[in-house]
Image 1 (tube, rainbow, N blue to C red):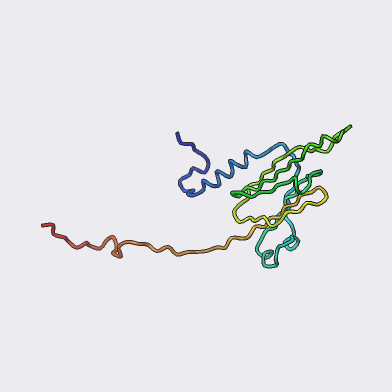
Image 2: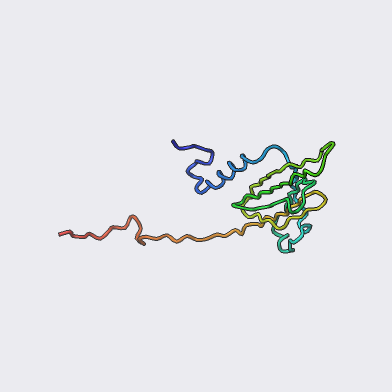
Amino acid sequence: MTRMTMLSNPLLLGFEEIERLIDRAGKGSSDGYPPYNIERLAKPAMNGASESDSDRTDVLRITLAVAGFTRDQLDITLEDKQLTIRGKQQDDKAREYLYRGIAARQFTRTFVLADGIEVRNADLSNGLLSIDLIRLEPERLVRRIDINGSTKSPGEPQPFKNRS
């Protein structure tokens, strides 16, 4: 049985990838930990963005609250348009907590990135992990497609071929 979806329209050729990304985004973590912000920055404010970049880009920043995590306990990967941030702390058996209010559990937070978005850098400061992204405007290309086949128009008479 064929699975019908909103992108099954025969006029939407090649959009299977988008459907796959939507499915993957829906299966992401929904527990809310760690909390995060996504913000659009003033274009020249991002470190590493040149003036030529800022003229034709969107600059975004994802900031995650990762209090108590060190740089070595965090891992950021980008695979197949999927940005994944993982954090894992070692359980410190030597400490005896009377009250533990700072979350120290492992986490995985995933963001599906659109085409044309590049990860520029990541910074950990004061318990906040900031990941800077840049979206380059795609170049609009118009390409002429040649048509192969006979140069005769359909109404022209074809020469008679005797088969004898």
